[in-house]
Image (cartoon, rainbow, N blue to C red):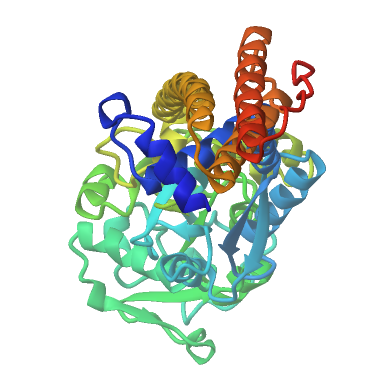
Length: 510
């Protein structure tokens, strides 16, 4: 039946009056028209979807970013400072949080953890290992080298400790680094990197690093080799006692100005009324030039306090820096937020751990020895992009997409309305043709087929009325045409059966 109706419909409509189409297009058109009947629901669903996506994005952006940081060794000042920052970030509910992993291997293991992707951040020492995948966020601290010559003991009290075979009074104090050969140097701390630092300094003063020999506990009572630089490393937890027992000529302390390690070393080197002497590293700039892992620096007069001030005059020295570094792939915004939070929180932490106040901004110059993370550099240089600057391209692209979709949707609506008008005109024309065909129909079967077509047009009309896509004029035209066609069918049935035609109910109520 449907096939016959389609054939009748096509026969009644010349091809020149019908736009190129096919069954597939007719099917698509029907689906599209059904979709257009629910345009309001579609728009509402789209708006709700966009709102949900925006709400999810906002909620996600408000969640703090957790960063894993590797620091060590356990119970070190660095570990305590980083743990204090982690606690402060959590208390202040900042947008970055620190998940602290304390590694026993210290800066070297922390650097390896960053390179292996096991950490987002790491605390590293410049002369130990800089991760290939790391860029600086902040300078955690600067360790300066202090060469301290102990003052002569008070003659009234006499010399204490072992003299290594000679009376302290008969040994001329060291006055410069070139005189280290044949003397005993005590390094505070057992890090092998401090020994490497000493060798780098001696090399600059034409003292072969191979002449440096390490002393064991059994060697403390023996005289120093005249052609060697004897070195002993102290446990920083008991500096004063170690210095007294080892009879060193020079103490080498590597730590921040004002650190407990250096303060203990200075206290142990003060044996009488006179303060200890501080040796200058006059070739500090040349050493830093030769060894980029070090920086030339200066210990200001009176930096260690005391009266008279210690040192009495500023002395040139070498410093080695500890950095908080981040992996290169860390987003610029997260790196900027982290830098901001570190610098903003340091004073609050300094009340508990004074060393936290020493955190500094890294050098943002492009030729800096340690590259700075672009996000940290943008924040420090005041070039941090605003929200619009960061997402300008995406916003522009989104507007273009919305504009394109809007234009396309408007075009489809226009096409649908035009298509509806064409279909309605065809339906009205077909109703007129049905009325004409009914008057000349030869059989009731033909009339039944024409009635089926009228019923189909009525069904389509009812759906259009329900979708509010028909105005009163169109409804009146349909009603009149349907009434005319059904009247013709009724009259022709009566004529074929030899009976008088029956009146038809009006459909104007549609």
